[in-house]
Length: 252
Image (cartoon, rainbow, N blue to C red; front, side, top):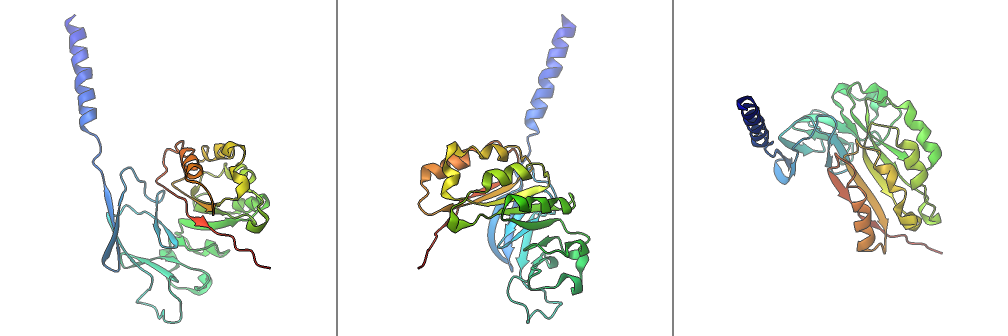
């Protein structure tokens, strides 16, 4: 009897210790050129797996408690480049826009962690972590096989808007096998709201996704938006959901 009581007491102590060791919230403070912009709860975040959205860049979090960013690189003559050609985080180059900066000829290739847009020369960047890829049809998903799995992806699913054709179900079913997708940006058409949003079942299998943005057509109701958000509760590591709207203007 004494042994049983002793064992029970040990179990109670272990449970009490576990409850007492609950993680304290951890916050990331974000500054733009020294000016405070935002704070984000990063409790439970993982280095290189979670991402911070910095304007048009998706920066792979490096474990920082504070980030001060800008879009110019003082050590280079950047006057010839438009804004956002570079992303600088805590005084170090972190990202480039390959549309403006030619990767093959740029210095500091080893410093680049993220790209603003896809570029076929990405393999010249030895420490690249994050890269966006555009998908305009189910056929385009085959191109993801050529990207090393150690590079995390932001996948943009972009249908032919004016035709109101939905490619979302077919594309999601094709990319669900890619475990390195961290961000999804999906442009929805009216047809995506039919069949009780059955395509969302594919999202639930993409358990590494951290952020999802749905571009919803003008006229989407609050009830429809809430329904979409509710279908994402199955994602265990989801950090943020955005639902901006878009308007189709047809001329002629």
